Image 1 (cartoon, rainbow, N blue to C red):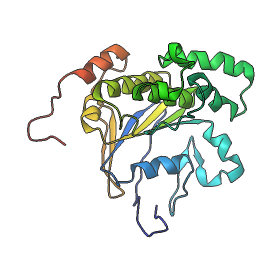
Image 2 (image 1 turned 90 degrees about the vertical axis):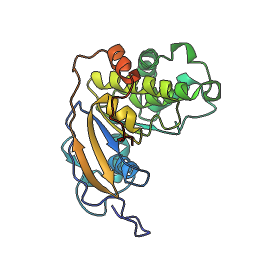
Image 3 (image 1 turned 60 degrees about the vertical axis):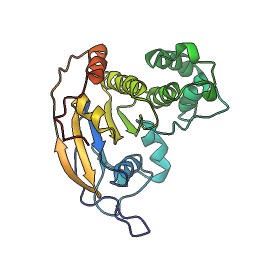
Image 4 (image 1 turned 120 degrees about the horizontal axis):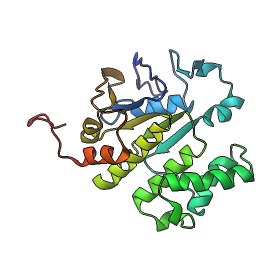
Length: 241
């Protein structure tokens, strides 16, 4: 992927993610993480190469069909992108409205996703009445209300304190356990180490590491998962990121 300025954002970056995987995309600022996310939601078009999602090449998706394609992808951003003049309930409902959801679907789905994300008591609050962690939960609820098969998260814990970050990762893990494939772009190396999921590392647009750690129990509960994240780091001295 080359930008009009001539900067190369991605260079021969090839990888595949299986259904129901939980994968981290890591790397320094400017390494190409956000570009990958933007390509996957078809906000950008690659200069060269092929991107396939669910067996379909994205270049074959016509512009008028892009909104339909995006209905099957949930996206979570670092800056939340919430509508400030709408309540928590309405922010989540809006994601269904713009994709043609009926009033019945909204009445059924929104309360369910608010319960899943721990927001049942905040449905009438506005974004400026919520903490940063709660705002990110609304962002995740909005992204997952359609139960998309793929969820993309771009630095979802970037502006959050460590304990709140654990809660957000725990929520993403819970979503992954429902069968949704999750790809998280982050620079939170310590968190990534503890989660022990597959890691793709980018450096100057190239993939320099593809590590499937897999050192975890697949039937791990969300409580066990959170406790492991809270445990002291076991990274050997001198190897801090």
